[in-house]
Image (cartoon, rainbow, N blue to C red; front, side):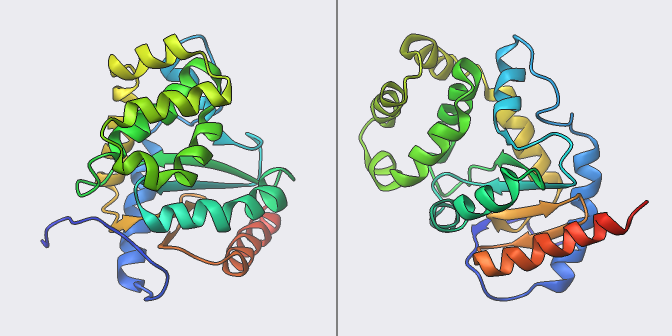
Length: 228
């Protein structure tokens, strides 16, 4: 068996055999996860998990985005493509979108950024607010001597309570959730980020344009419409 390596993935090369194998393994792995975003209690880890699910719980299509905050292709997708998908599909109730963290070993600040985003969700239901800020400011915090100072400034600008946010990060409060994400991705034998799992069936590896996503989600919605 070949070693498991992870990379940021650009658009381009189709990996049919890899994709079919990944789709099967992803489906198995997702079944072991508690459905995200379906219940939100007072427990901070539950709150963090719920915060990263965007869109209606009963949306016909479910997409898991497996990404790394330090990955340039993930950042490009977040800036250029996802806002349009969010407006056209998520906000319209057609898709629920769930972010799954996979900080890659060659990105030393990705773990800290993932914790910051999850902590924003844990203390203020603000995962997506910090998600956007982290991707937009990737060059700043990834090169900063102390990324925590940058994360704290982002949180303050977003109106996130500073002391609970800091305590969440420095105590690694959301580490169990982050580890669960990583185990999910590793058990799925994914080859890099970003990776997208549509309805536990189809796996898309790498950056895709908005037009390509229109075809992908349109096909998924048509498939659901045909089911009784």
